[in-house]
Length: 238
Image (tube, rainbow, N blue to C red; front, side):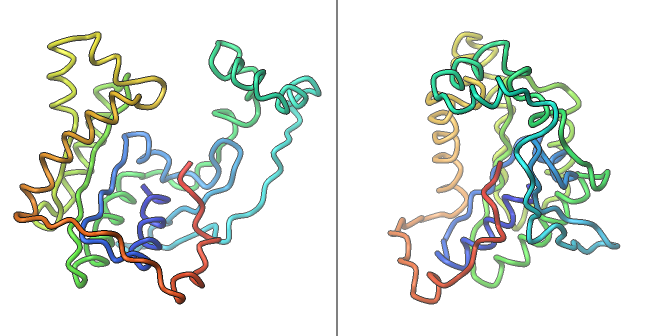
């Protein structure tokens, strides 16, 4: 949620949208506690009282090589074919050793508090411009009761009067009850084409209801001032 918020903040200044769709998954709440993920530094927010303080910006550059990587692993990384095969089979843990799940740094403990404060800041950021925010709670294929509860607690702290909340969990459970095969078709690691189409249908139903007579418009072209806006300190979401 932290990197999504930073990215949204930068893009709102450039495009002045009527609607902002702010999506997140349960894992994003945990990731908000990290200063390093998958061996790569990232911005994060520390909490002082009820205030967010941005840390780790500019993001420190980190070496992509680690002592755990052998010469063979580095050599295979130059081959698109080898990379594709290794990433889609049981060898991925070996191939990514030292870069993936084993290399992260936790900077704070309470990701839920960070997410709630981010929603508060997001509300303040958009209310003067009349931007409607849709909070989109998405889920992976194999969520536990614990991770689902994380999302429910975070959504409870969001101002439902300021945001339109689209929680996909009930709809996904309906699909799974109806057809396990259809449910599984929605995922291929991340969501598949079918899964994203499902999300689009849910949003299509929710947005007009939230905004009444919604008139779609072409995005505003960035101005010369926008073009000079430096996004170098706001990395893409990983």
